[in-house]
Length: 289
Image (cartoon, rainbow, N blue to C red; front, side, top):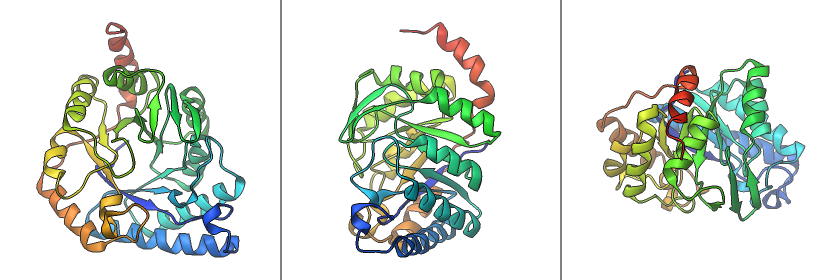
């Protein structure tokens, strides 16, 4: 399983059933979102990104852990259209934390990866308490016989972990005990970057276990040189949009500039650790805290 290194975030407009789409017929909302998603995916692909992740960003306020059927249907149709339009890695993230639906869509559509905001532990968020469900996801992935990578946030943005304030322990919990294929570090909220010291600490704990490490918020053209050495991959969305505002129209010039700079800084080899999971679990057992 090969993981993408530079992932562009597709911020979908409001989908059917969400407050922002109340003045649109469900089919019209789907069509507008689908056209936008394909257009953005093609822009990312042509600019040199090797992955995109589709998010129902416009559906705020978000459901906690289970979105309604119309959202699942809309995301599936849009993901299928994006999958057909580009040859790069395609991922899916159903906000706030409906990883079960995301896995089902990814399996049927043939997505390469999915992002899970809370895979392990308990996190207090503006949607309430979110609980990880790694046991179900890993078993369901095996049952479906699909090779969908799980990229999971550690101490995710817009939330406070109630399980552990220790970043190193949190990385071990997500990467070793919950068997994520990669972990994501973010700042406090969408578009905000974590301190470099946080990335340094994350790298320190992820590297010995060969856990792929991603920066999942706050990357921009100004800080790219500073953050790139500490991570295997970057997931970027807000800074590539007009005015640097999340959810705004994608700015093709910003996308091209970011991709060029990323390429100049060199590329780390990012690969799945799934085949080494058991060895890492055994190694991690000797370092339990």
